[in-house]
Image (cartoon, rainbow, N blue to C red; front, top):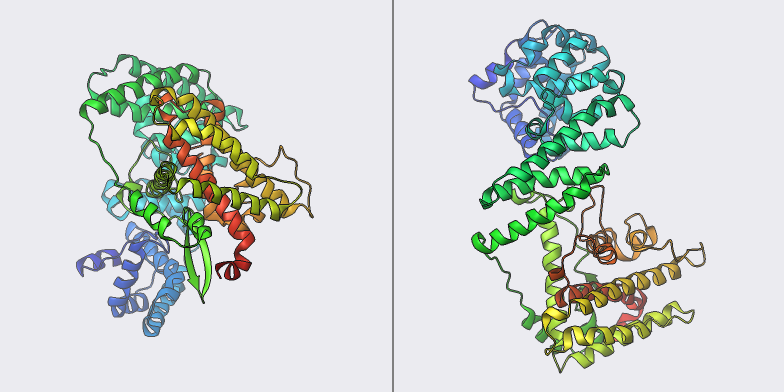
Length: 560
């Protein structure tokens, strides 16, 4: 078999050598290409045999066979039985030849022809990326000359695959040092901050002394370069400020992760940059607003006949299955993953595959809508007295179910006293209520934690002792907390954690509880009545979830 890739190109058959996995659209495109040209593939794999790898043409043909073998796992996804069988036959023919090419032949070919494999003319086939996968797999047999060549010409690929080559770099640290040519901010930026800096964090916090020695001067130079940039950049041009802020954010967060003492100085730079950005936004920025249908929501709640449903409807939606009601929190919807370009582009806002930018925005809109609804009810003279009674009754019911002399409704009286000057009196100067808002916000976080802790202890009281100091918001809202997951669900707990704490290795979230407690990441203007309303809405969500857990078995009788 010779030149199959070129033949495919001449026949205008679209087929890539890279296997992107089950979920990638390109994988289905490749399957479709094979099925539409099944006679060609069957004939080629039947009549042209690959016995060795002596040239780049052989190597390309081998990778084509390899791709067809890897695609076998996609056969169950093919709808037609006829197409399934045809694809299986083609894969079997490919596998028959693929299995004849031993790993030793692949290693020998890479060791002898690495410069040709990585030549620019083969980049269109993504040979560097595919070959690096093979080098990763067979790195024990790959010559040092190959790694030296890669450090000089494709250092970005090795850095991206650092975890795969970490053991080799630890044994041969001089190879790792060769990855960095200029060892300054400009080079780290060109290699991508989000690729290099996590590697540096891993090494800095790790145990390999030699690798630490290598990165230490690089880190110091990068920090010095960034400080020089901050001090000397012309900040009168708002475009310069925005570019600087993005790069500065990467370095500053990196410094905090490695606990670099210079981070204390950079905190001041951060405030200066944020102040400058805010000034520029006022001059050059545009305003984007969401119109929230608060009036319609309040009227809908008023029209509901059952006051239990009125309270639950603040945070939950009612669904019926087989004439059985189920109230589901609006925060329990799972993430849809990456949805569009907003989730694909780089941003200084931390995100991951679950808490994508779009999912974070959805959560924030839901919380803002809930806060606006709560705020409107607080100012509705007709509805507000009833609303107070709803909360008192729900908390009294929960206390009764938990037992042990717990009176959660008493906390509401204290909260009402704190809320009254914050959101019920229009006569108070808004600029002067920040301290009152802070107190109310902090107390609501404490009430939420107390309610969750009291409920959790009730769930496990007959099985395990729970220390009051160990049952913190972080552990109570953890998706590893099986008892809470059984009641709230993982997605619901993740949403609450996003607001009250942080989630995942990237510490994604608003972290309201700790930020308020330690006055971190907040400014005076952030402490306002709408923050209080948002936290109160989250508190309401927890109340309603626990209330529904206790009463759903008897809900049909309660409705009657």
